[in-house]
Length: 349
Image 1 (cartoon, rainbow, N blue to C red):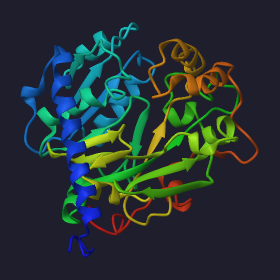
Image 2 (image 1 turned 90 degrees about the horizontal axis):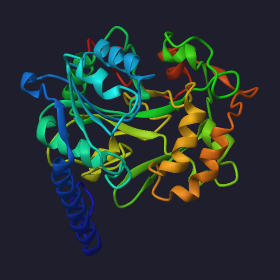
Image 3 (image 1 turned 90 degrees about the vertical axis):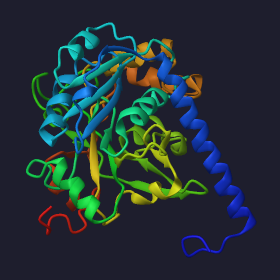
Image 4 (image 1 turned 135 degrees about the horizontal axis):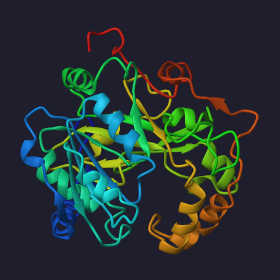
């Protein structure tokens, strides 16, 4: 018996294959470490109990100021960031931050498993034993009572519940007008610049044998993938993990190995404590970035298959419709069932 389930030859074979898949991914990450050139390495200052943030970035000057401010407010004490050959001054800006270590990677983002091999190398080297936030520069993690209870209290709560990770749904925010415009000027917070979202429908399913979840729905499916919704973006992520060097992200931060980690989140409607990743993809530079991606072809396994998607974004459509909902904060996310709280709000945290 394994975990209360009968052990069968098929289950043994599947477990063996997944262990080898995880080892292959870890080996890729260790090799990818050679592709990283340190620009500023402040990891010697990391202490036991520090909460770390990992990200791969390229030309993110529009997003990084709020990104850094937000995660500092949450209690992140060290940022470990890979810069994939930025040309807008992102690398210089990051080098000037006293809590940021930054490495340059000039290789292919797509061939590095969309940056996860590079981040896997840093997680293996520096993340073991720490609670780690692994996100994109356009993702801001919020959770119930986030603006009063920092990550240190949240992770203590998760430790007490013996939960090694917390899941989150990526919520695409968009403006009232066409892409390229925002609802507030650049200095405003993300949810003022992009004030709207789709409250549903969303659907989530588990996929054996990794037990990874696939969450679909939302504005991008509605606008860009209505004729083939299964090709729409995957919206579930596991961005907050008490890291162990035996762990490996498989598909961005959508899924992990060992498979048991994927059981930590079942998408909207899951009553357990979870979060929302406010997604700032559709800021004012989104049409220009989509046009650039048509030429770079770095963000999908089959870039040609998603050319129409980038072409459509490049035309700056209006995503708003009469069922769009204005974002008001974390309580709204709970009321809509897009995020869970478990016993977090009734506890001391």
